[in-house]
Length: 322
Image (cartoon, rainbow, N blue to C red; front, side, top):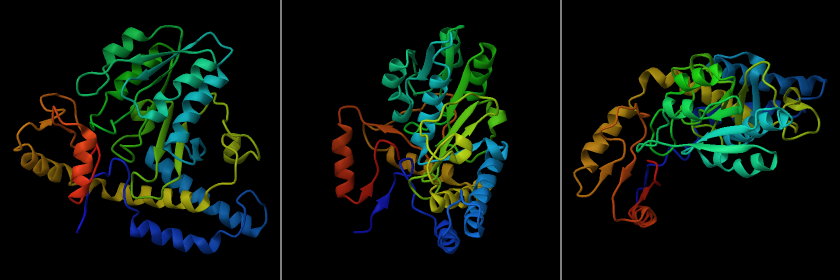
């Protein structure tokens, strides 16, 4: 049976071009990037190139990019690292979008242990977060607000630039999970975020590597301590091969932005599938923009797990996000 893969929101296949660049890098990976000898410097050059590729895509300074093991670790580093650095301060509230990825929402228990009150920002019917709801919750006690750019399930794009503005006016930091929208027609400055997490495996890069943007001057405590790698932001010998893959996946994705035809394919898919009785497009009738590769469907009365298993048996791979 020829299978159809419809779960790119969960992960994407590794690009053959990225694989080729990773294989080419294998011959230059004998040294530890922290070593000063020739082999170490050669390995460090590969990391520097990847950092330049990612920072160019984010529109930030070279030194504001920290490599991590995943988008999840990067989000944890952003939220918990900021909270830990500010645990003795007067701002003791953290606002999280109610529809955030688990890597954000599951920080609640740790934040509570650090003495912070976590408040969930309510979501609209389509899963989006409104500027008005954020504004209502902002006060002088809020340390940080975390709202994702593009929702990983519905695909709805949040008004993050406007949210960042009200956060800045209130003196709160703004973290934005951009795993689903990186790279794109935006920069960290156009969004206004102080911290941004991204991931390689959502853009046809390798699994097990991500990056965190930290705006210069933002106080963040490292979650991992040791040898002082990544400018003492994230200790541990770097995942050199994964970092190389993230860098080249970023390059490939940026080159394809202009030729992105996913919205055309998505619309054709929706036109076909919505002919089925009882199938509803979650964001239909809303005025929020949606990611071009997302089509979130509901069929009231049917359990999602049953639909997923049946589709899998028919050769279609996909979850609630397709």
